[in-house]
Image 1: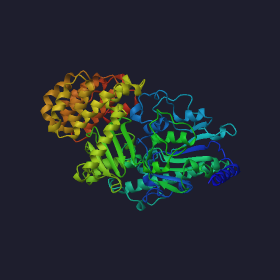
Image 2 (image 1 turned 180 degrees about the vertical axis):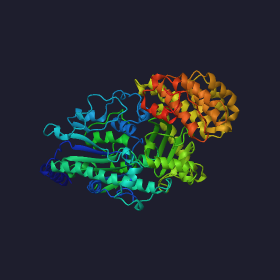
Image 3 (image 1 turned 120 degrees about the vertical axis):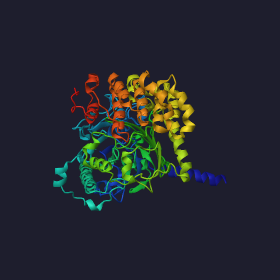
Image 4 (image 1 turned 90 degrees about the vertical axis):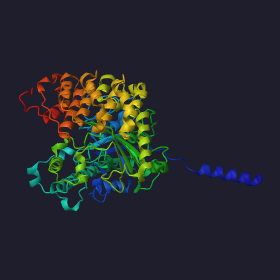
Length: 624
């Protein structure tokens, strides 16, 4: 026995001595190619109703296709702020699009390129940033239209971001003359128009025109890859291609539906770095990944430790188990203000089910948003609705929403059938509801304070503000959840909160009561008092909004008096959102605004100008 053991030890030592040491690989170069405003629905690589993108498909054939990749927000600045920070926007207050004020990074955490730069990488961005977060000088070596990886020192590894704007929403702002004159290469009859859209010639044309732009974008992706190939860098360069959030057909960008969130993602990994992905070339995964994970993944690929303050989790790189990534089945997303349009929506997708929580369900999706309505298709949708020429699924966009929605997105990819009231899905509904509650409480989600309150009191250190007020935020979440009860069950709690010394408890009680509308008319006398003398102007507006839902005749004047009294641009923007909802929504409340009484301090904000113009500014004798 001893001789056998000795023989085995000698054999093992001999084998070890003869085995060459594993090659130490240089740090990989990493390139991100980002196309603006693309969801996965319009590319054949991901969806049968999409168009072919041969250059992106080539990357997928030699890399990995992620069929469940998501932006955490459906608009540029909020999505890109999540990407650059590796942190959820509602925790940082970095999720409001267009920012009124930038926020700092969490203490002890830097934007992810700073860690690459510290590790010796040359970091470049060409060229869009659009961050809602304050950027330090330690992030990019160059962020400009001239930024290029070729400008690095010889032999220096690089990280380069290349942004493609060809598919941006603005490129679909064609007018009637262009529509008449420009024929599409894609056949308008070849692609299915999603069922909640009008089935018109304009929508078919817009579908085809958008796919033409995707083809051009794919050619630009090919040009970036060709440049890397010509430089002999392909064997040392990991390449990401992804859309920066969902697509731009109406109801996509700016909305927490799958067409606004579910993005294409392909990652090419050279042969020598395959250990970083532990997958076969040309493979795919259905594991859920989202933008909050991209920064940590990049650091893992570069062999850099992920800082604890980032919320995301690596899905490629050192120490990442592909089986664990394949098992991931959940993503979280958020929407609040988009330019001048305010809302408050959160969503969880888990597996095939999508849960959407509309905290202000009276804010119908189709409410005026200046930039959206530059598109002819949006205008036609609204016109057809006003004429009563749409079916139920198509009309939903212009009507109040349910506080919570549940969709089977595999059976119903365009989220037209709300399953929240179906007893067969009660367990799923309750599971996802609690999941979301746990998330917004533990984060904590700062949006349970109005944005202007955060700007005035939290933006110096939003994360610290959130931790200091985590208990109060939890209480506001609980008040908001009263929307999901019957009015009879919620009544006593709401009555108590209306008289709270906490102004934001009163605020949320008013929002919830507006969700009940006329059913809660028994509170009208109490709320009329709030509408005239609450210490918080926005509470007067919310109270008057409830009175309008109940048919109270003087609600418009109560709102206007609060509007004229405010000198806070964020607060005025929210007030104007309420006015727009009441004027353009089912209530059709008439507002005779004296624009000369609105504070000059807030008129320089372009979003406010858009909203004021929609409401008549510039068209009345009292305009400034």
